[in-house]
Image (tube, rainbow, N blue to C red; front, side, top):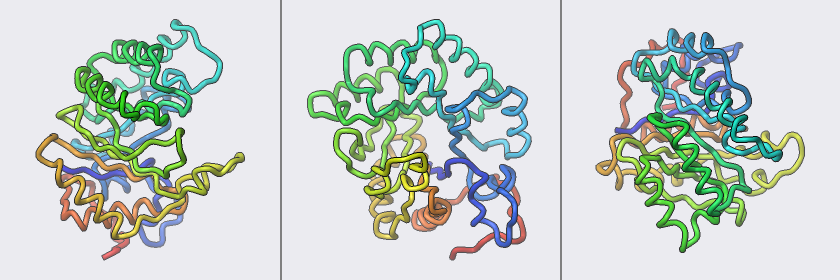
Length: 282
Protein backbone atom coordinates (compact mmCIF):
# COMPACT_ATOMS: atom_id res chain seq x y z
CA UNK A 1 0.00 0.00 0.00
CA UNK A 2 1.16 3.50 -0.83
CA UNK A 3 0.13 6.65 0.99
CA UNK A 4 1.15 10.22 0.22
CA UNK A 5 0.99 13.32 2.39
CA UNK A 6 2.45 16.76 3.01
CA UNK A 7 4.00 18.51 5.97
CA UNK A 8 1.34 20.62 7.69
CA UNK A 9 -2.02 21.39 6.14
CA UNK A 10 -2.63 25.13 6.37
CA UNK A 11 -0.13 26.37 3.77
CA UNK A 12 -1.25 24.27 0.80
CA UNK A 13 -3.83 26.71 -0.54
CA UNK A 14 -2.97 25.75 -4.12
CA UNK A 15 -5.15 22.65 -3.69
CA UNK A 16 -8.32 24.75 -3.90
CA UNK A 17 -9.16 27.50 -6.37
CA UNK A 18 -9.82 31.03 -5.16
CA UNK A 19 -9.17 30.21 -1.51
CA UNK A 20 -8.41 33.24 0.67
CA UNK A 21 -7.83 31.52 3.99
CA UNK A 22 -5.31 28.98 5.32
CA UNK A 23 -6.37 25.48 4.37
CA UNK A 24 -8.21 23.66 7.14
CA UNK A 25 -7.45 20.09 8.14
CA UNK A 26 -10.90 19.09 6.94
CA UNK A 27 -10.18 20.58 3.50
CA UNK A 28 -6.71 19.04 3.35
CA UNK A 29 -8.04 15.58 4.17
CA UNK A 30 -10.15 15.67 1.01
CA UNK A 31 -6.90 15.19 -0.93
CA UNK A 32 -4.54 13.13 1.21
CA UNK A 33 -4.95 10.38 3.84
CA UNK A 34 -2.04 11.47 6.04
CA UNK A 35 -0.18 14.55 7.23
CA UNK A 36 3.12 15.19 8.97
CA UNK A 37 3.06 17.70 11.83
CA UNK A 38 6.05 19.46 13.37
CA UNK A 39 3.85 21.24 15.93
CA UNK A 40 5.09 18.90 18.65
CA UNK A 41 8.72 19.62 17.78
CA UNK A 42 8.45 23.21 18.94
CA UNK A 43 5.88 22.81 21.71
CA UNK A 44 3.55 20.14 22.96
CA UNK A 45 -0.12 21.04 22.32
CA UNK A 46 -3.02 20.37 24.63
CA UNK A 47 -4.76 17.02 24.57
CA UNK A 48 -8.01 18.79 23.67
CA UNK A 49 -6.41 20.36 20.59
CA UNK A 50 -5.13 16.99 19.40
CA UNK A 51 -8.51 15.37 20.03
CA UNK A 52 -10.20 18.09 17.96
CA UNK A 53 -8.17 17.08 14.90
CA UNK A 54 -9.89 13.72 14.89
CA UNK A 55 -13.28 15.37 14.47
CA UNK A 56 -12.13 16.91 11.17
CA UNK A 57 -10.79 13.84 9.37
CA UNK A 58 -12.09 10.47 8.13
CA UNK A 59 -11.74 7.45 10.38
CA UNK A 60 -8.71 6.04 8.51
CA UNK A 61 -6.71 9.31 8.40
CA UNK A 62 -3.25 9.03 10.01
CA UNK A 63 -0.81 11.50 11.55
CA UNK A 64 2.98 11.49 11.41
CA UNK A 65 4.02 13.36 14.55
CA UNK A 66 7.47 14.90 14.85
CA UNK A 67 9.04 14.24 18.24
CA UNK A 68 9.67 17.20 20.54
CA UNK A 69 13.09 18.78 20.11
CA UNK A 70 13.97 18.19 23.76
CA UNK A 71 14.19 14.43 23.42
CA UNK A 72 15.78 14.37 19.99
CA UNK A 73 18.59 16.35 21.63
CA UNK A 74 18.32 19.54 19.60
CA UNK A 75 18.89 21.91 22.54
CA UNK A 76 22.62 22.59 22.79
CA UNK A 77 22.34 22.72 26.57
CA UNK A 78 22.34 19.19 27.94
CA UNK A 79 19.10 18.24 29.66
CA UNK A 80 18.99 15.89 32.62
CA UNK A 81 17.47 12.45 32.28
CA UNK A 82 14.65 13.58 34.55
CA UNK A 83 13.90 16.61 32.35
CA UNK A 84 13.84 14.48 29.20
CA UNK A 85 11.64 11.87 30.88
CA UNK A 86 9.16 14.57 31.94
CA UNK A 87 8.96 15.89 28.37
CA UNK A 88 8.41 12.41 27.01
CA UNK A 89 5.58 11.82 29.51
CA UNK A 90 3.98 15.12 28.48
CA UNK A 91 4.36 14.17 24.82
CA UNK A 92 2.78 10.74 25.31
CA UNK A 93 -0.18 12.28 27.11
CA UNK A 94 -0.72 14.77 24.28
CA UNK A 95 -0.74 12.12 21.55
CA UNK A 96 -2.99 9.74 23.51
CA UNK A 97 -6.12 10.63 21.46
CA UNK A 98 -4.27 9.59 18.29
CA UNK A 99 -3.03 6.37 19.87
CA UNK A 100 -6.45 5.50 21.30
CA UNK A 101 -8.11 6.03 17.91
CA UNK A 102 -5.46 4.27 15.83
CA UNK A 103 -4.67 7.56 14.09
CA UNK A 104 -0.93 7.68 14.82
CA UNK A 105 1.08 6.43 11.86
CA UNK A 106 4.48 6.99 13.45
CA UNK A 107 6.53 9.28 15.69
CA UNK A 108 9.23 10.90 13.58
CA UNK A 109 12.42 11.27 15.62
CA UNK A 110 14.60 13.60 13.56
CA UNK A 111 18.01 13.95 15.15
CA UNK A 112 20.21 17.04 14.70
CA UNK A 113 23.23 17.13 12.36
CA UNK A 114 25.64 16.91 15.30
CA UNK A 115 24.05 13.65 16.55
CA UNK A 116 26.68 11.32 15.14
CA UNK A 117 27.23 7.58 15.28
CA UNK A 118 28.86 7.06 18.68
CA UNK A 119 28.41 4.50 21.43
CA UNK A 120 26.98 7.22 23.65
CA UNK A 121 24.31 8.13 21.09
CA UNK A 122 23.40 4.49 20.43
CA UNK A 123 22.86 4.14 24.19
CA UNK A 124 20.57 7.15 24.02
CA UNK A 125 18.59 5.57 21.17
CA UNK A 126 18.05 2.50 23.35
CA UNK A 127 16.83 4.75 26.15
CA UNK A 128 14.43 6.56 23.82
CA UNK A 129 13.02 3.30 22.45
CA UNK A 130 12.40 2.12 26.01
CA UNK A 131 10.72 5.39 27.01
CA UNK A 132 8.48 5.27 23.93
CA UNK A 133 7.80 1.54 24.15
CA UNK A 134 4.79 0.19 22.23
CA UNK A 135 4.63 3.30 20.04
CA UNK A 136 5.56 3.29 16.31
CA UNK A 137 8.91 5.02 15.84
CA UNK A 138 10.80 6.33 12.82
CA UNK A 139 14.39 7.58 13.03
CA UNK A 140 15.79 10.21 10.68
CA UNK A 141 19.50 10.89 10.98
CA UNK A 142 21.20 13.96 9.56
CA UNK A 143 24.83 13.07 10.11
CA UNK A 144 26.51 10.93 7.47
CA UNK A 145 28.51 8.94 10.02
CA UNK A 146 25.45 6.68 10.46
CA UNK A 147 25.74 5.72 6.79
CA UNK A 148 29.45 4.98 6.68
CA UNK A 149 30.36 1.58 5.28
CA UNK A 150 31.37 0.26 8.71
CA UNK A 151 28.27 1.59 10.47
CA UNK A 152 25.30 1.29 8.15
CA UNK A 153 24.74 -2.46 8.42
CA UNK A 154 24.82 -2.18 12.21
CA UNK A 155 22.27 0.63 11.99
CA UNK A 156 19.98 -1.50 9.83
CA UNK A 157 20.24 -4.39 12.27
CA UNK A 158 19.61 -2.11 15.24
CA UNK A 159 16.48 -0.62 13.69
CA UNK A 160 15.22 -4.02 12.53
CA UNK A 161 15.67 -5.61 15.95
CA UNK A 162 13.75 -2.77 17.57
CA UNK A 163 10.99 -2.46 14.92
CA UNK A 164 12.04 1.11 14.17
CA UNK A 165 11.52 2.56 10.68
CA UNK A 166 14.71 3.99 9.21
CA UNK A 167 13.51 7.01 7.25
CA UNK A 168 14.54 7.28 3.60
CA UNK A 169 15.49 10.92 3.03
CA UNK A 170 15.84 12.81 -0.23
CA UNK A 171 17.92 15.97 0.31
CA UNK A 172 20.88 17.80 -1.24
CA UNK A 173 24.34 16.37 -0.83
CA UNK A 174 26.24 18.87 1.30
CA UNK A 175 28.79 16.51 2.80
CA UNK A 176 28.97 15.18 6.34
CA UNK A 177 25.86 17.01 7.53
CA UNK A 178 23.60 15.39 4.96
CA UNK A 179 22.71 11.79 4.25
CA UNK A 180 22.26 9.68 1.11
CA UNK A 181 18.89 8.33 0.02
CA UNK A 182 18.62 4.78 1.38
CA UNK A 183 15.23 3.09 1.18
CA UNK A 184 15.82 0.08 3.41
CA UNK A 185 13.03 -1.89 5.07
CA UNK A 186 13.70 -2.16 8.82
CA UNK A 187 10.07 -2.37 9.90
CA UNK A 188 7.70 -4.65 7.98
CA UNK A 189 4.78 -2.32 8.70
CA UNK A 190 6.15 0.96 7.35
CA UNK A 191 8.73 2.61 5.14
CA UNK A 192 8.66 6.38 5.58
CA UNK A 193 10.06 8.47 2.72
CA UNK A 194 10.62 12.19 3.29
CA UNK A 195 11.34 14.48 0.34
CA UNK A 196 13.02 17.75 1.25
CA UNK A 197 13.97 18.77 -2.29
CA UNK A 198 17.43 19.08 -3.85
CA UNK A 199 18.17 22.79 -3.53
CA UNK A 200 21.82 22.65 -2.51
CA UNK A 201 22.34 26.40 -2.31
CA UNK A 202 19.14 26.85 -0.32
CA UNK A 203 20.07 24.02 2.03
CA UNK A 204 23.29 25.83 2.91
CA UNK A 205 21.69 29.25 3.26
CA UNK A 206 22.52 30.98 6.53
CA UNK A 207 20.49 33.55 8.43
CA UNK A 208 17.17 33.81 10.27
CA UNK A 209 15.15 33.22 7.09
CA UNK A 210 16.90 29.93 6.21
CA UNK A 211 13.63 27.98 6.18
CA UNK A 212 12.40 30.05 3.23
CA UNK A 213 15.25 28.75 1.09
CA UNK A 214 15.96 25.28 2.45
CA UNK A 215 13.00 23.43 0.90
CA UNK A 216 12.47 25.64 -2.15
CA UNK A 217 12.42 22.98 -4.83
CA UNK A 218 10.16 21.70 -7.59
CA UNK A 219 10.69 18.02 -8.44
CA UNK A 220 10.75 17.30 -12.16
CA UNK A 221 8.61 14.59 -13.71
CA UNK A 222 11.80 12.65 -14.42
CA UNK A 223 12.85 12.79 -10.76
CA UNK A 224 9.41 11.70 -9.60
CA UNK A 225 9.39 8.88 -12.15
CA UNK A 226 12.74 7.63 -10.85
CA UNK A 227 11.40 7.72 -7.30
CA UNK A 228 8.35 5.77 -8.43
CA UNK A 229 10.53 3.07 -10.00
CA UNK A 230 12.64 2.81 -6.85
CA UNK A 231 9.63 2.41 -4.56
CA UNK A 232 7.84 -0.06 -6.83
CA UNK A 233 10.70 -2.48 -6.23
CA UNK A 234 9.84 -2.52 -2.53
CA UNK A 235 6.06 -2.68 -2.61
CA UNK A 236 5.96 -6.38 -1.70
CA UNK A 237 8.46 -6.09 1.16
CA UNK A 238 6.48 -3.82 3.47
CA UNK A 239 2.83 -3.21 4.38
CA UNK A 240 2.92 0.53 3.68
CA UNK A 241 5.19 3.00 1.94
CA UNK A 242 4.32 6.52 3.09
CA UNK A 243 5.76 9.38 1.03
CA UNK A 244 5.85 12.83 2.64
CA UNK A 245 6.63 15.93 0.57
CA UNK A 246 8.40 18.61 2.61
CA UNK A 247 9.40 20.91 -0.27
CA UNK A 248 7.02 23.60 0.93
CA UNK A 249 9.01 26.82 0.62
CA UNK A 250 7.86 27.60 -2.92
CA UNK A 251 4.50 25.87 -2.69
CA UNK A 252 5.58 22.91 -4.81
CA UNK A 253 4.78 20.08 -2.38
CA UNK A 254 1.09 19.69 -3.21
CA UNK A 255 1.66 19.79 -6.97
CA UNK A 256 4.49 17.26 -6.78
CA UNK A 257 2.49 14.96 -4.50
CA UNK A 258 -0.48 14.91 -6.87
CA UNK A 259 1.84 14.32 -9.82
CA UNK A 260 3.39 11.30 -8.14
CA UNK A 261 -0.05 10.03 -7.13
CA UNK A 262 -1.11 10.18 -10.78
CA UNK A 263 2.11 8.53 -12.03
CA UNK A 264 1.67 5.64 -9.61
CA UNK A 265 -2.07 5.39 -10.24
CA UNK A 266 -2.74 5.54 -6.50
CA UNK A 267 -6.34 5.79 -5.29
CA UNK A 268 -7.20 6.91 -1.77
CA UNK A 269 -10.40 5.60 -0.19
CA UNK A 270 -12.52 7.28 2.46
CA UNK A 271 -11.27 10.85 2.01
CA UNK A 272 -13.34 13.84 3.04
CA UNK A 273 -15.61 15.25 0.35
CA UNK A 274 -13.71 17.59 -1.95
CA UNK A 275 -14.77 21.24 -2.06
CA UNK A 276 -16.43 22.34 -5.31
CA UNK A 277 -13.53 24.64 -6.23
CA UNK A 278 -10.73 22.09 -6.04
CA UNK A 279 -7.76 22.65 -8.31
CA UNK A 280 -7.48 20.14 -11.14
CA UNK A 281 -3.82 19.73 -12.11
CA UNK A 282 -4.55 17.13 -14.74
